[in-house]
Image (cartoon, rainbow, N blue to C red):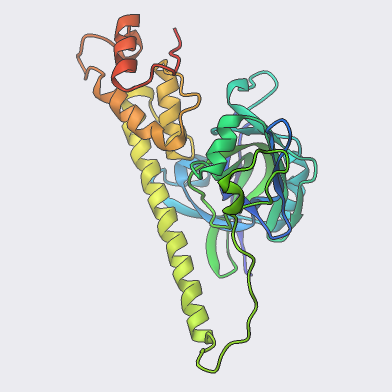
Length: 342
């Protein structure tokens, strides 16, 4: 791998924490269980991975110093050695329902739903560890697939350095990674395995779901009329998987751009890294408590909210809703159980 360093920029201590989305993954030896108190335990889960991912220039710390364009997409490499050094910083970090930078002085208790275990380690190319999820809403979101991916939030230094990794070209690398939190999300930035079914919990009541696990694989000898997969067919399958992953990444970036444009008239430019997080931030800034709202519901909720706001020159600002107006909004869109901050 040929590389050449031409510059670097370090995120400030107060810079936004960058998310790195990774599907919540288990290998065959992993265990997912629910204890007697209903808490979900996930062992040997993929938390992040060494890979190349697309980022808008405006998402990269120190973009101006590096000469990056806000709306240009750059391929950024998360190196194995940087992840290995960063592994201890992820131990014991909070698991959140959405991306929010955390600290002891500003801890988002209402969206903290679990914690990372103390067994985080790097085994190339994956950063793995265990999770415990305490909150019933978060457990349900994992079980029903609405938030079945985990996204790491971290600070890092961006360095201008070109090269290739596993055949994927990049122009920037991440260094000095320091993890801040994990978030449960819907769409992963980096394709990987999705969390699988686990052994039934012996403490849970008998129900039909106990019999919905994947069947054990059977190993049989191919019959004479079965044709083994050729190398060309395997290459084609791999190429198709890569293409699908790239298409998902492009769709995610398009959704991100759309979300930022939609909320700009209300809250200005938002430097978050997922569309649901952006919509959720705008709603909270408008005084709407979105605790318990699934990620896929944040966009339509924001769109409904935006349609009810006066345009430029209108009679009232976004934050000027009185109690009656807020209650009417809640009734119209079925939000009676969702609180509104006064």
